[in-house]
Length: 386
Image 1: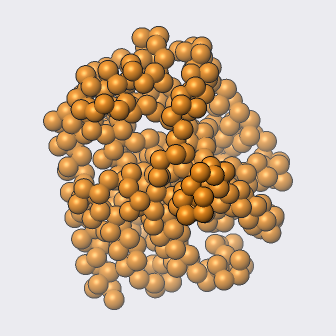
Image 2 (image 1 turned 90 degrees about the vertical axis):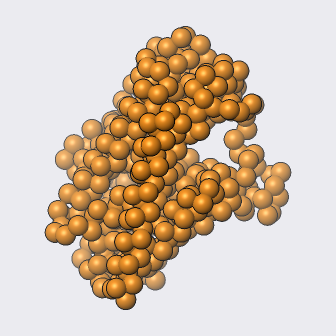
C-alpha cells in the first residue's frame, strides 16, 4: 500500500509541476494572464476604477478585455462586491501583461506563505508532508485561472494563525473573505456565536474595521460602487448558470426555476452548524472542529467554483497529518487530486458540471483521514459520534 501511495503521489506531483509550467509559460506569452483567464476581469475592473468609470459596466469591460487579447463577444464582469477594489485597484496602474505577471507573483507568494503558516500551526512537524499542499488541485487551478481564491486562503490562514494572540488583526485579515461571503455562511455564523460565547469581541471589531476600510476605499474610487454592483447583479443573475455545486444541482433536479432552492442547503447547513457549535462550544478549536465546519460550509455554498475550494487547504493538511499519524493511506488524496488535474489537463474547464464532485470528495477525504481521532485529546471528533 505504501508503494502504491508513493507512486500515486509522485504522479500527482509531476502533474502539478506540469500545471505550474503551463501557467508560467502562458503568462510569458501574454495569454494566461490576460485574454483567456479570469485575471482579465480583475484587470479591467482596476482599469475602469482608475479612469473614474463604472467597474461593472459590461460594454466598457468588453472593450478592455478585447484589448488584452480576449476574443469573445461576452464580457467577463466580476461578480465580487466593491470590497474587491482593494485588490484590483493597483492593476489599473499597469498594462495587462505586466499586471498578469505581478498578479501571478502575488498569488504564488500568498500560496507559499499560507502553506508555511499552516505548517507552523501544525507544530512545525518534521518531514516534508506539508509540501504536498503545493499539489492541491484547487490552488493550482487558481494559478491557471488567475482567480482570487488563494487571497481568501491567506486571509483565512492568517485568522487561524493570529486569533489566539492578535484577535483584532485576525479579524481584520478575515475581512478579505467577504469578497466571496457565500463561501463562508456556516463558518461566519459560528464565528459570530463563538466570539460572543468566548467574548472575543476584538475579532468582530477587526472584521468590522476591515470591512469599513474596504468600503471606504471603494467609495474613494467610486462613490456609486454599491448601486452599480446591485444593478449588475440584477441584470447578470449569477444564480442562473449551471454552476458545479451540490446546491445548484439540487435546484436543477427539483425545480430549476425556483432560485430559493439553491440556498436551501446553505440554510440547512447553518442550522447544523449552530447545533454543532453549541454541542462543542466549551472545547471549540478553530484548528480542529473549525476545519470540518469549513469543509461543510464550502460544500453547501449556493455558488462556488473549484478555485474557491482553495480555502480548504487548512483542512486538507490537517487530514494529511492525521492520516500519517494513524497509518492510513494517502492514496485517496492522491487519487482525488490526480483526477482533478487530469480533467484540467484534458481541457475540461471548471465551468462544467464535471467538477460538482470535488467539494464532497475533499469532505469525504477529511472524514476518512480523521475518523476516530480522540475527543478527549482535544482533537477533531470522530464523525461517527456526530
